[in-house]
Length: 187
Image (cartoon, one colour):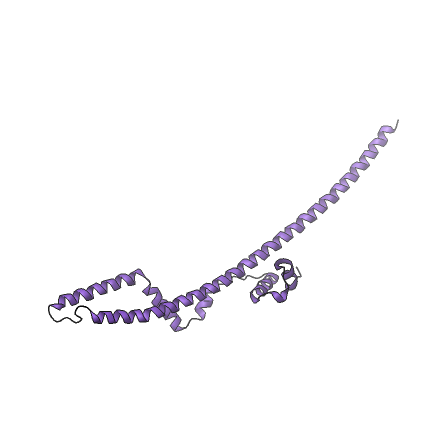
């Protein structure tokens, strides 16, 4: 299979090579070289993560879990119950729990942007995964088209071979028929 990217682009993608994206060129090149194109995108993303990225992902993972929610509810109950019980004595944060509201506001003010950073990173990961999926799907389609082409060529050569064999057999039957008719006409 001595083909070029230009031939593959014209045949399977119905486009000229200068109209191909870098991704499509990479797929056609891997098809020519018969190499795999799939890769673990998680490793590629993890390789480029900074400490802040990993921290944002960890905070988002913890902050969005049921264990965090239940622990935080338990903390709120303990805080309010403790301060209501202490209200009769010397309450640290008396009702309406102004210090608790301040703490909750600060947690929300810090947690929301961190979760948004993690969501933006997840969106970028999703884009990378989608591009990789397109690449792998395109390669699979091209390989399937190549297999169909090979099967069609094989079937065509078999049909031509069978036609030639039928012609040879017809010629042999004709010769046998001539020999038999000559033998019948002899006295």
